Each structure stands twice: as structure tokens, then as C-alpha cells.
Length: 317
Image 1: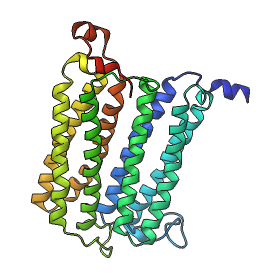
Image 2 (image 1 turned 90 degrees about the vertical axis):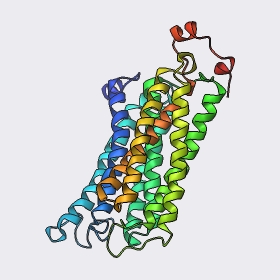
Image 3 (image 1 turned 180 degrees about the vertical axis):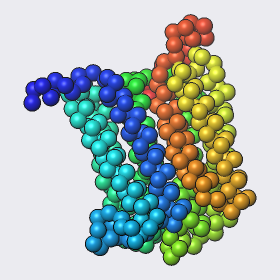
Image 4 (image 1 turned 180 degrees about the horizontal axis):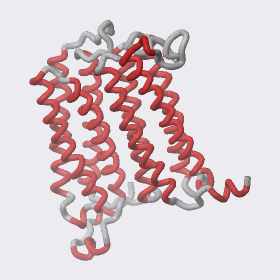
């Protein structure tokens, strides 16, 4: 038992970093597989829960490709659970030194059975669009938690002071707020559209055309805020490398997302584009979360020496 305890990391090492990356990537991947379930009409490929059928835990040949797709998505939940348990175990020796990481691993671990239960309710309610939407929203919450976990593993505990000016902090917070609105409106819009996950599943009955605009408007604001942050953070003294990289990546993803949205609106919501749109929304959220967190990073000494640091950059919350 002592040898096992001694084997566990006493510092953040490669094992923890790899599992933290695996946690974020797997949370995004399961959004893609969940989207495939809906977009292929496989939402009721396993018509009951927690079993796949009344008599079988797994899909049967008679259920065809829809059963395979739905059961495959359910199976991926166990992969996420293994990753979450592995992270929890790896952090046991660090639970006092890095309690924030330990708490995040617990939250991620609890989120996975929570998702499984909501997935079960989704099936038992014949793919109720609001339950399906809640399923996706919780997935996005878990993406944020995994992003925070990965950031803390890579960059250390939260600093007491900020490393960027008030304007950058305000714009970053506004970006996260508007992006959240855009994502929720996207979920509601999808609930009114044609991709119900099954031919007999209900829709929310709202006006899809109008909801598309309610989803698009905050998306344009998101792009504007990102571009503003990119311009401001070009000055090395105003932001660290992590903030610049993450916000630049967010800008690239946001441009692709808006292009995809316009393509979908003009071409009748092709399944591949809707699935890609869902996955990229999670990637965008992870990048914006990272940008917001990195606002506490202090720019490099070389940058501060060359470009004097604003007084507000080191002020407290």
C-alpha cells in the first residue's frame, strides 16, 4: 500500500498533464458523438435506459446502425469515467497542496454520471427537446471545468492579482457572458429545427427563423469582442503569451463558426455542418475560458521592461 501511495505524484508531472488533456479532449469528443446520435436519427437506437433494450445491455444486430451509434455514445461515457477516476487518484497526494485541482477532479467525476442520468431521461421522454438541450448545456459546463483543470495543471494555482488592465478584464468577462447567451440560444434554436434525433420526436414549437437571428446577433458580438481583444493584447506588456494565443485561436474558431452558421442557414442545415458547429462551439468555449483565466498571468519580464506595465495590471480583484 505504501508503494502505491509513493507511486502517486507528489508534484504536477507528465501523468497528470496527460490525463488533464485527455479530460478536455474527451469532453469535446463526446459532444461530437452525441451530435452524431441526433443527426443520424439514432436518438432512440437504444429505446430504453439504462439497458439498451428491455432484454439486453448492449445493442443487438436487429437494431441496425442506429443501435450501434447510440450504444457507442453510451459506451464512451465509461471512457470519460475512467479518465475522471484516474485524475482523482493521481491527485490524492496533492489534495492539500493543490486543493483546487482535487475539487475540480471531483466535480468532473460527478458530472459524468449526471450526464448519464440526463441522457437516460432524454430517452425515456422520447427525446424531449428541452431535456436534449440540457444534456448539451451540461456537456458545455463540463468542457469549462476541464478547461480550468487543464489550465491550473499547466500554469499553477490562481494568482491573487491580475496581470492585465481593467479594460482587458472587462472585455474578457463580457465575452464569456455574450458567448454563453449565444450558446444557449443555439441550443434553443436547434430544439426548433429538423434534427430531432428520431422521426417521431417532438420539437419545441418555436419559430426557427426568428431564433436563428437571436442566435446570430450575439455571435457577431462575440466576434467583435474577440477581435477587439486581439488588437489590444498585441502589446506585449498588456497580456501574457497564453492570453494572446488563446484569444487568437478563439478568433479563428469564431470566424469558422459564423461561416458555418451562414452556410447552414442557406443550405437547409446539412447534418455534417450542424455536427461540426456543435463541436467547434465547445472548442471556442474552451479557448475563451482559457483566455479569461490567463488574465491573471503577468507578462514576461522582457515585455514589461520594454513596455511599462499599467498600474491596474497588478491590482487585486
